[in-house]
Image 1: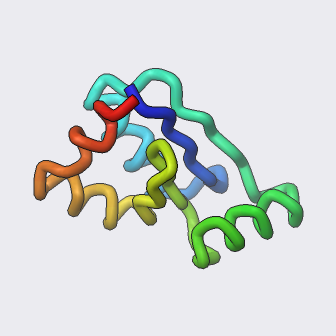
Image 2: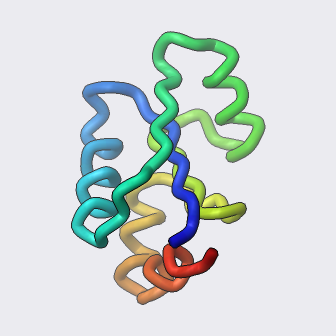
Length: 86
């Protein structure tokens, strides 16, 4: 299964939804990076994604986007394909 990295802030409902969807799909080892207490990590997230909202989700080397982007990809059948890549 591909490595999943997610930049989050606590109490973010979309972050929780993203984590729940990944859990439902059997993804167990999601690298969670909290950006609420670190300007450096927040800047890293912005540099990698070009966005300033959370969550920002990466699967392998692919930037998926936020929860709504990931959910749309899931609805189209593309999320599982990304997750199954090594």
